[in-house]
Length: 123
Length: 164
Image (cartoon, rainbow over the protein chains, first blue to last red):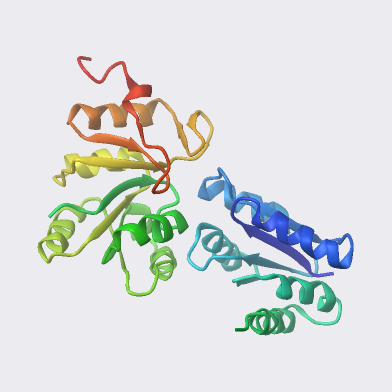
């Protein structure tokens, strides 16, 4: 099962994960991390641990393009083949992740999640 | 013209800088002064991509910095100058680029450092570099994001600034 790692600022990632689980029930292979108080190096270690052993690959979700979490995820993506990184995560994207991750491969899933995230923004 | 912000922060270009301070001061250019980053094309690209639209990012080495910074300031550009350690901040100052105030924005935990503030951990080497800057008359202002309480680092450095 493709692993989801929500890596963002303060409590935001935990809150997003809780919201997903409030809709869809407790999830395996789905974790949230905060960058609070961590150096760049510690952030990288923390995400490395979170994706370790994810044999089917992982998608790292971040919220802010250009932010420290985004940078860390880009570093990791560069080091490891089975990592995809999507920034600008929102709840529709995460709900789609949980619903689709067993039906699609890593690349197709990452691609379709960007669409779901975009569709969730309307005015 | 003075730079808009000279900041020591081991995360360099990140949200607090681009969003927090950026939306307050609207810099034309963010300058990362860092030998290691300057040595890696990929790291340079990563930080360049981190900037908000319309803000330029440049990475320079410590030895290039004084001339490069003076030239941009001469052109009238609003600059943010980012350093990843107090040591680099001191080397920049002694290398010929003098500044009045250093914003101490983030030194995170690593072995041997003790925590002073949620965003500030220091070891002896860090303290010595800050003391040397204080002796040069540089103001050391601890403040991670605009609007949060500003604390004078001298409160913790106390000894060794005047005299020894």
